[in-house]
Length: 471
Image (tube, rainbow, N blue to C red):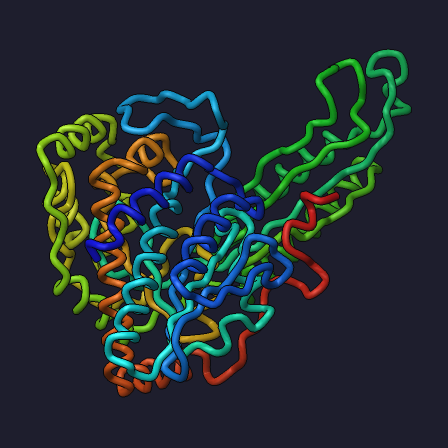
């Protein structure tokens, strides 16, 4: 691994600096493709209608192990590196608030080490690095799954930067997202209000209807919205156009669809009340995550076998400065602190609160719980046995999608967490290559969880990646 430390540190810094948004990660994906091509991987780019999606493969025969990489940033999270206060960069309004520069770089490091292992041992096996764009609001993996990109795999593994070291367990939510575009009639708001039909009124009435719907949904359901177009800034003009985007979550895609249908009825009702027209443009969706206890156990073995990072005083000093900005409530929402009971969660929080960086691996227990939030890793997990873990790159309790996460993105602590994650993924892949019985057990559990039913993509076949942004 020492051979690749400088290479991966530089790759992470590049992707962090690029901070490219969903479906537009041209330089980020290009940097990874260039690196892996030079390292002898066979690259196939432009997958599933996405310019920035690719695979990089090495080896031959089974088992075929997929390692998932991400590299998209978030809008509105511009932040200077290694500064412990909100300080936007001048170069870009975007930032890696979810640590995907680290995620992608760590996965690349794992692929390189598995490549070396296959070369040294001459064992049968293939490692495939999946370049997955648009996890943030684009569901890139759902399009890859729909195109059959994961079908050849025996298992898929990945990780995510966070505030702790823990195997991810339980299920994240399925979701779908759609734009509701209302069209009305403009008129002078004082001189001829009776001639106008307000598209903005329709948006507001839709939002009111959705708010009333919230009383009649399951506790695990979520309805989020943002008004993306108010129709103008002149109050004396009745707006003839307005738009709102809705993101709907539930425990599985079937429940999401039912909830989405109800939201669509509310939109049509709002149009009826205001004598406007509504155009519903489905944007994207992803499936709930199917966890796999067999693969989780292997990840845990690797996490507890690979040496944890050792931090310098300077690195810990910066972590302590960031720690001062983290609120107590943020600790409770740290996804690395997944627990089966409130009491257990409190114990975890108490243990981590005083630490600038988590220096241990949390005990693992497979849990069948629903975790608020979504990930398109779910679509991969419905095709092939999949597991993931969280690696400590940030101060415990660092809020997801925050300036604090961006500020830590190329820090010494984050880079060391990324290198640890690369070693863990590589060690896990090697264990799977060495012992085919593990994959057989993982497959058996997968078939039981899916009831043997084939994957069904939650995105309609006519919807293409980023289709709403192109029109």
